[in-house]
Every structure is written in structure tokens, then in C-alpha cells.
Image: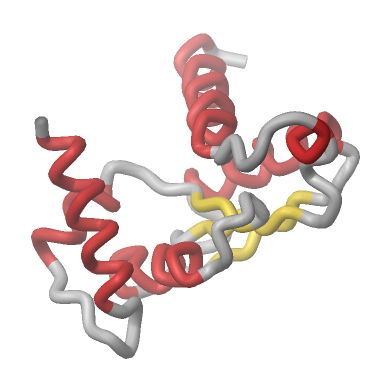
Length: 133
């Protein structure tokens, strides 16, 4: 494998691992995950982000002993898939793969209540502001 590709995979795996919420501590944290994990990919199937997401999902499945399901939800500049993750319960079983577009989308698109909701819009705006500092 070429060195740039190896670094990309390593960075992708670290990003996913750091994005997983700690949840609770103690015995509860030791049991995570106890059910399948859904990895939302807001990009088209077969693209570069999808390929990385499937590779990361496979490695996480092997490490956790639970299936990690890649769910492609492309469209609207990634706001459809991102909206699904924002509306999902905050239990750590719905994760998001993304690129830098998540920070740009807030300034480009007006998020409507039909696609994502005001909660999603506020969270994306906070995320974009924190990345801009």
C-alpha cells in the first residue's frame, strides 16, 4: 500500500475512534457496543469516502465483535445523512463519516425543518464556528 494511502486510512480510523462518545463509565462502557452500530455515510456509494468508511467499519466490527453497518444517505450536500445522525438518539450507536464539507455546508445551505430541523442547524453552526477558531 502506498504511504499516502496508508496515512489516509490511519487518519480515518483515528477520526472515527475519537468521534465515538465515551457514554457512561464503568461496567456500562466495558459492554459497548452491545448491539449493531450504524455508520451513516452522507456520500454516494463507491466513492472515496464510502471506500474508507467500509474499511473502517470492517475493522471496527472485528475489534468490537458487533456488526458495523455502513448506511449511505447521499444528497443535499451531505445534510440528509448528517440530519439522520443529529436526530438519532445520543447513545453512540449511530456514527457519521464526513469530510470538511460539514463545516462549509452551514454557510452555503439554509437548513430547513423538513431536511434536518433547527436542532441540526444549530449543531452544524456550532461545529463550523469551533473549527474556524
